[in-house]
Figure 1 (tube, helix red, strand yellow):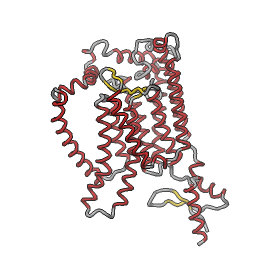
Figure 2 (cartoon, helix red, strand yellow):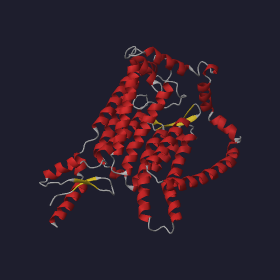
Figure 3 (cartoon, rainbow, N blue to C red):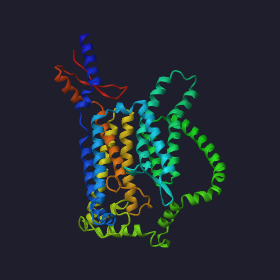
Figure 4 (tube, rainbow, N blue to C red):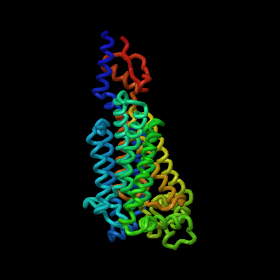
Length: 456
């Protein structure tokens, strides 16, 4: 009996005092990759922005990089602090989940009302201290919100499983809670991004949300029920939109779409028919190809790019990869790609070792998002994809965007510290330090987590 009591006391002390987590470090390989990406990005950002810094500030070559350095550096420090000091339990609180959804929704509405207009689109919100795109906050927020919401819904459904009157009620309720309601809330964010309009961000947002539902491990029956309900919602919404939109806009639906997304159709036409496009329309594509081609294997040398001298538009932003290719050659662009591949491997490894479903979704979701964004930017810079305006994480100009990317990485590091399956060797060490011997490690079939038992 005393042996059983010792077992219980040891287990409770390990869990309640969180000794395992206080001794565990953040994933060191991912942390190193993260810092390498940030450092490499700042170096290339400085090199690619020299020309535009001179043009905007008169004679200061460091004007843009200084701002980028302080914002990105601050975000890195904040993300590491969150990963080190904030437990996942904090984010699981109901008030945080509700507040997160309300804040992102408010930002997406506010940018439509008071956002800065560029080329007919309201994407940027000026908060005096800094400007940013709420669509970036929506991408980051959707991953965290869905992870927490779906974990909460699964817990709710487990508590209600004995209260369903018949199997059909259980079937429809699972689809409603696990798919329909969360998807409808995400559809609101999607619609608010589309009407800015920011179609490329909306497409990435939709892909991320869809993959998050896949990561959630929803059963097939819940998928079927949820899809049926979503089809009904989509049908009603489409009929309502087709009826109301002409009266609100004073034009047909096709005319409204053609006017609202004229820039998107123009980009697609330029991509499909470059020979028929104007010189200005294909300037970025041509100059990016020249930059990548002139770099060869090892590049022309760091800081010696010709294309960044006002030849390649957005050389410090969407097309920074072309400058990397010009200055550092095939070796430089391959190094960037390998860093993101290594980031992906470590991120998904952390996700697979997560102890909770929310931890898995957070780590896998942010890993997928960052790598997807990088691959799309690679595709645009190499002309495999049409121009999208999607930045390269940790490299492109945009302090607030890189701050969001840093916070996303911080959440993956948080999962690597606070939500990993217990290390049996660490349990033995902690038990030994308490003057107790720990017996063989066993795996419980119900949770698939490794636990230790004390020999009596």
